[in-house]
Amino acid sequence: MTGILHLIRERLPELNPKDREIAAFILEQPELMIRMGIKELSEAANASTASISRFCKLIQTNGYADLKMKIAAELAMKPMPETYQDIVAGNTLPGIVSAIEANHIHSISDTTRLVDYRQLEAVLELLQAAGRIDLYGVATSGIVASDFAQKLIRIGKRAQAFTDPHMQITSASSLGSGDLVIAVSYSGETPEIIDSVRCAKEGGAKAVSLTRYGPNTLAAAADIALFTSSLESGMHRGDMASRIAQLHIIDILFTALLSQQFDEHVPHLERSFQMVNKYRREKGFCQ
Image (tube, rainbow, N blue to C red):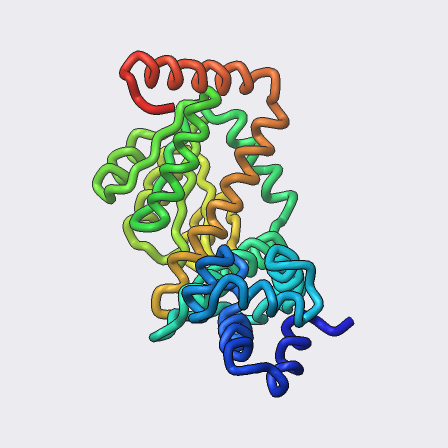
């Protein structure tokens, strides 16, 4: 079936100048157009709303809403870029939105393909049994470590994230048998994280690493290594996509832990939710 954008492109030579302006805008920026109301498009294409309505009839659609729906459906069927998209100068806002969407989808899909279910099960057993769970990460990986820590706290786990290298080694020196370290580092080569993991293991704690796929020092030092997709090099792209991949694994672990010990953890989760809401109401914070 011929797509609506192809139909508009075919009709270009026979359109009058005003209709050609409308068509040109739609063809050049379809991702932006489907987010516009008819008045916004009339201003952007320098045409009246009546002209746009006539244009919709001309290309055999049932009005502006129908035109947007057909274009959106066609865009949804466009193949996803096969590689990660890097930051480029002068990209349009719709182009940026599409590139980031593609990068995140690639990151999650590629990471899912790397999942080793036996390793995940082993990590879940450690999480269930651990008396204390300390999480290490710096920079972007520190944000991921903090996210997992707050999730674990909400279900009653004794967890804490450390993003300062000095506090990481201090934490590691106090861990012992029955405790667990989860170390997050995209490169797997962050010296402070590696030193802290080794220190924790010397005291008898178990260690889980979350790094990029492939050989790296942190994965080798850990008892169990989990991996995210190894992205192509890019100026700033890696930080964004790697964070999404790391959070994907964290969410899998948290959801599985909650599901496997549902009756134990859900009361903690519900009480946490209730207490936070009560606090916000008492302090007059917005809901």
